[in-house]
Length: 513
Image 1 (cartoon, rainbow, N blue to C red):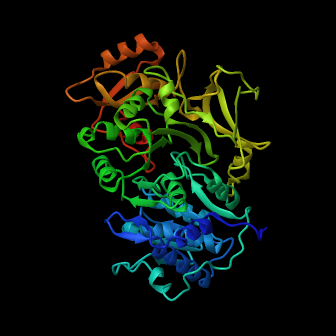
Image 2 (cartoon, rainbow, N blue to C red):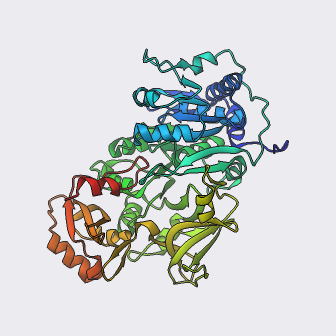
Image 3 (cartoon, rainbow, N blue to C red):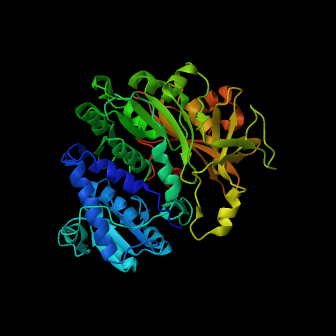
């Protein structure tokens, strides 16, 4: 049901942009500056054009887009029209993208210049009512330029009544096995995010966010918050550590979101020591397990600006750790992911559902107003993880006596070996303290008898060549025999998924013997 008093997130963002039309809103990957007024006008016109083409509440607008201003404008325009938005992630195969496109009942597929090549591969595999481009398609024949078509439309907010229970989007999981799950989210919980107060004095300069990871993920959410707060979003096509460091200095970046493996790349880059990082106010990180050793290195390198964000697509925000709290935990030992946000409840439960006390490890369950509405068209799967208003995250963790939440691992990443259970992150954290190891990923490999074995892929530190027997002895001495890798693979780099997490599936396939 629509609510006449409700203002959606996309509407709030665009109203904030039009209230100060001359400020720089977007710096594109090619260095072009787009003012708030021009950007808002593009989004408004595009919303009217989509409405004229039959896009409305209940429609699905699917985006095959990169880190572009057009991608952001299209997402807001679709939201204003009342459509749910789906992003087709870079790094997924065309057949998987085709299955996602069909499963979400795509009304319109929008393609930007960054993904024209992917569209040529995808289009023969899909059957959707309309395929349109966000800008001229360079004679590829993909579809009509919808931005050009919208030029004569009004640059004002369309009169579409959207309610808090209307769909805003479907976000897909990584899909390491089979077709990714579609996580349905609603306008209400997303809108509430803009009411959260952020640390910083009222007279502080507006934020300048560097979006170097995909706008389809958290960089897009943080872009929304930045534009709403009067800030500027600086876009990069992808995460290249040298370019990121250069952009922080050149653009006086205040905020950046990254994942732990990408922090490792920044720390290991030769330009780090002579880059001016003084503008940084927040380096948010999360998305996968973080090595305490390397996070402490990052605090020394970047200053007291690191913020741990623990969340997931099914729950949005769960817990956070401030820069001051990072300092509280000293120079060794594990680091928590933080304390729960004020409006989020977290319980640690045993397998039988019993709530466990501080210090005891169990499954992390979450209750909040920002939980997903469910998995798209998968009620049985939804019922498995959403019960009585609580979400079973699939993570293993525990609270300390002060209410800080620690994560051991993903339940599904557990390696069951003879003699016990091995959580890969525990071994990874230890290996990263070894002087011969710069980066690593630990994963389980099954033999033909379905027994699991611990394998480690390792990027050697400069001038080192770690050997299996030495690494096994080190892990055995510090953690115990069952944790010791049975195979050591020396690699030039740890491959990452499209969202920047270690791609252990690829490692298993590439290093299989």
